[in-house]
Image (tube, rainbow, N blue to C red; front, side):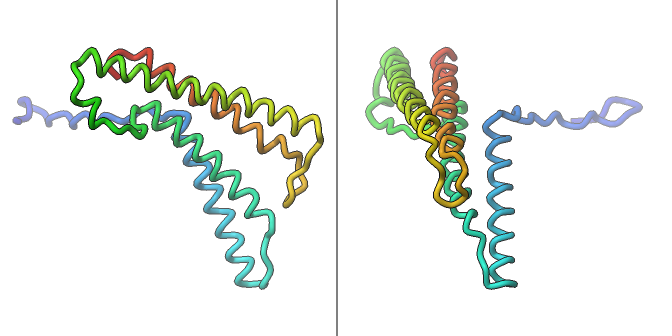
Amino acid sequence: MSAPEGGAAPPPRVERPALRLEDALAALIMAVLCVITLVNVLTRYFTNASFAFTEEVSVYLVVVMTFVGAAGAFARGHHLAITFLVDRLPARGRAVQRVFALGCGVVMFGVLVWWGGLMWWDDFQSGLTSPGLGVPQWWYTAAVPVLSALIVVRLLQRIARPGG
């Protein structure tokens, strides 16, 4: 490719993927996990003491990361799929199967929104506190219905997108 007369060729256009909510949340969670772990290791190394709360927070963040990762995978169409038989279907059959599989995900995560919401409400009403930090347990259980709802939204977006 030659440059136009009297000037340099324009730089090649680089396509950058749009930053999604899931990407930002995953980066934030990983950063927090790294900082918590580093501080705990350094504290243990220099003082022979350990921050007990780090395990509780780390487990919670890993659970949240699982939901966030699932939402991101569904948003990109990178969810786990076994397609040995589906790949042998005609185009119409593959399309029907795709909508059916995504619809099953909507139902499953919709149930998780419902039951997770009931679990959150029960924790909220009971005043149950977490074992490590003693904070209200509903702070943790709120993530289940909220992030399940995010996954439902991503699944519905995949269903609405033709062929994708």
